[in-house]
Image (cartoon, rainbow, N blue to C red; front, side, top):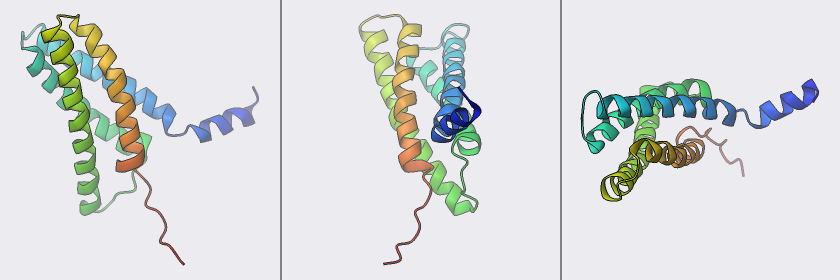
Length: 145
C-alpha cells in the first residue's frame, strides 16, 4: 500500500481511528474501575458499575473533546451545551450498561467480567454515533438561499 492510499484512509477515518483507540482506553478505565470497586472494595454490582461509569465518562469527555472530535466549542455556553449533551447521552448508555449488568449478572448469574466486556462493545458503538451526530457535530453553515 502506498503512502497516498494510507493518507486517504486516514483522512476518511480521521474520527474513527482515535475514537477506537480512546474507546478501548475508556473501556479499560471502565473495566479497571469496576473490578477495583467490585473485588478489592467488595461493592455491589450496581455500585461498582456506577463508579466505573462516572470515571469512564469523565475520561471519555476529555479525550473525545480534545483528540477525537477536536471540539470547536470555546465559550462557556458552547462548552456547557456540549457537556450537557455528552453527559446526557452517556447517561442513557450508562443506564443500558447498568440494565445489562443487572439482567445478565444479578438475574441470570452470568460472569460479570464477560458481560461487562460485551456490553461495553455495544456502549462504545452507541456513544460514537451520539458523539458524531449530536454532540461534537460541526455547526452547518447558514443557508444563503
